[in-house]
Image 1 (tube, rainbow over the protein chains, first blue to last red):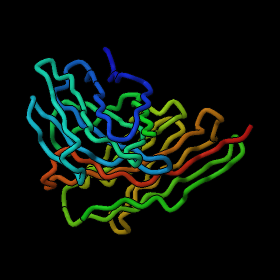
Image 2 (cartoon, rainbow over the protein chains, first blue to last red):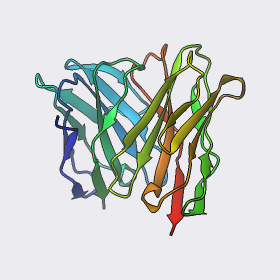
Image 3 (cartoon, helix red, strand yellow):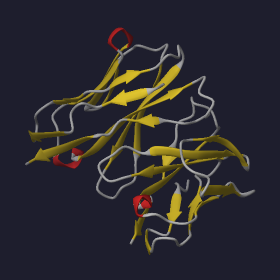
Length: 114
Length: 117
């Protein structure tokens, strides 16, 4: 069984640029959630996709957007990057989109914005 | 609003000591789920346990045990006979069944555990 994978591992961008992060969910999972983890803090929920539809969103501005594809892989797009966007971005997949479903996390993408 | 507090920022123990990581949560929902995750230096969050609000039975898994007490809104995690490989950041998380953001988990800020040989 393949776990959650994310790419790239590390990324360096400059302020104002746009970035796309990718996630492949665990086999059999139809739900993907994205989290932002700043240094020394716990992950913060960005949004969740369930069967290609956004299923919930945290307190992040619209420049954070996402997609989920028919194979349940997902992308996180961030436009107009700001210095505070520097963080570890974690993707988690689950069997369903409810609060009861355990989320399994990928290794993350570390984004640095200069 | 839901909230998770992990008051211990850092804990350092010597190998073979027992250690307890505290987690206190706030929720107005009667149905909710609590989780513990381990985050080693590699960054990946590793799932350890899920507990629903209707199951207050304590659980033991090898050297790990969890104590869930609704009366004090706590879900504490104990590692018995700690090992160097237990060194990591541990996160407690909460999901509410009635949260409109289905599937959203609220995390504490984590406890960094260092086990010294």
